[in-house]
Length: 127
Image (spheres, rainbow, N blue to C red):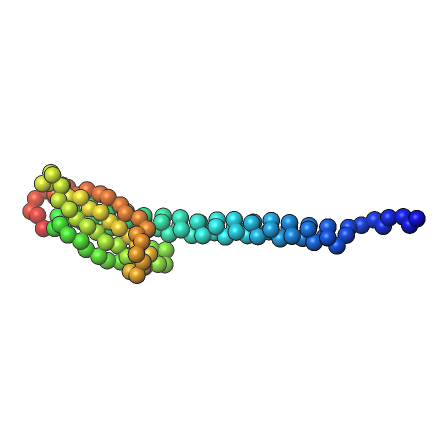
């Protein structure tokens, strides 16, 4: 009788490699999802800052904007962001609602963030 040889068979090695390949694919998919999510959250944060800046600019300027929508762009973190400010009347005639929606680019259909604020009628002559 011949003593049995020690070591792994070809099938055992192939099964181990298959398990390793499946595990590595799952890890890569998880890392990819994390990177995509981090980029999306960065864009949403920057878009929110753009909306805050636009609303603050309107409050500081002490304008009394007419109801309607205006569009523009702002540079933030080396990127041009597109915003739309929609002004609406409220039940209080001395307050107007402003919705600022921000997109990453003009062709984007989805809005990254929308900020709602209120403007009080400035004291003195209305511009």
